[in-house]
Amino acid sequence: MNVSQEEAQASLSTIRDVKVQTQRAAISTYASPMMILWGTLWIIAFTATHLYIEHGQHIFTAMNVVGIAVSAIIFYQLFHSKPPFREDPSERIGWRIAALWILLYVYVIIWLFLLAPFSGRQCNAFIGTAGMFACVVMGLWFRSTLMIVLGLAMTGVTLVGFYLLTSYYCLWMAIMGGGGLFGTGLYIRLRWR
Amino acid sequence: MAQLDNIIHQPVRLQIMSSLVSLDQNERVNFTYLRKLLKLTDGNLGAHLSKLEQAGYIKTDKTFVARKPQTFISATGKGRDAFEGHVATLKEIIEGEKK
Image (cartoon, rainbow over all chains, first blue to last red; front, side, top):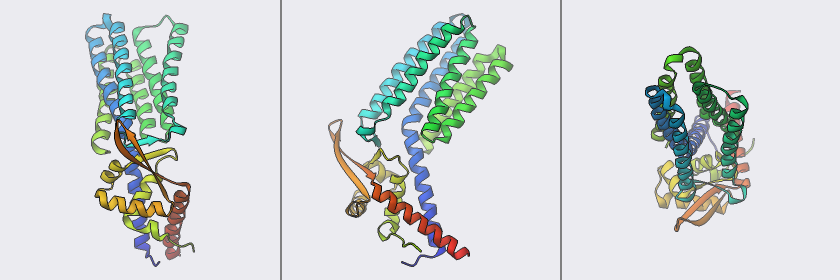
């Protein structure tokens, strides 16, 4: 078969485009609903805490309960409805992802007991950055640059708010943290499918 | 110089294989999704999948999800090797003409 350099180049471009498209779609399927959900919850919880700082602990407890419950429902739906992607049942890694997040929450609770006493702002930043650490780990695990960048960027946003914008920390986190998560989730849902 | 793979080189099959090899080895993709991703008709995609399956490059798995029939498709080890060889040959062609 005779193929010119131009044809070979065009074939390689097609391969690159389809690979990127497929990987983006795979990430979009699972990550975008989670980002939209947690982004929305962060916007609501941080804004409410800014307005009613004395109820911050209850607001975030409620946010975590709602977030975990809705995340579980979304994952159940994705795995059991009509998933575009599916893992080989003999090599399922879904349970390992769930185990990572459950373990993280358990360890965060242990660390909070060990580190107490702390302020609500410290607790908040600690849980947030721990979640972003898991996001970076998952990015490395699944070779997703987006998750690595998102995890690192959100960690940076949290640190900037924590150290530089003390009085407006919650409002900063609502807009930059929640808005960033929500915006990224929406962007990949609309553009990567 | 290694030979280009005639089965893979066809444009639609090249796209199908590119999509399948970009997934992890334990991942499969469903028929409807692949059809939408590559903007193909049912018949066109089905025909090309048959060719690839006959060559042993892909594996189809028919199953029921939420009581509805689903077809999942994945690249086989042989298919991944053939695809890698094909890509290497394309690169050789480009490099060869540069020299």
